Image 1: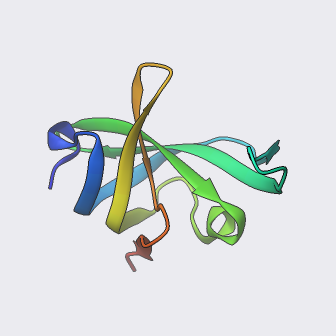
Image 2: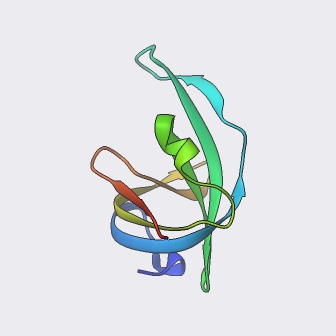
Length: 95
């Protein structure tokens, strides 16, 4: 699937290149758990989308890496589509 085709809900598979990576920051979940999150930008030839990575996944990628997200999740946050791994998602960093 291409980034321009993404809609809210489950994403079977999407590929792109990391073109931006923000600094990790600590947030507190609605359940009071403290977690680390970073905002990245994923781009393909049809568009770009904000990608949120949590915990150890943040250090697995850098700007310029090509990745594939399988079984990811697209949601809307502040009127902007946002991609994440969700509970069952997988991120593959292409060699």
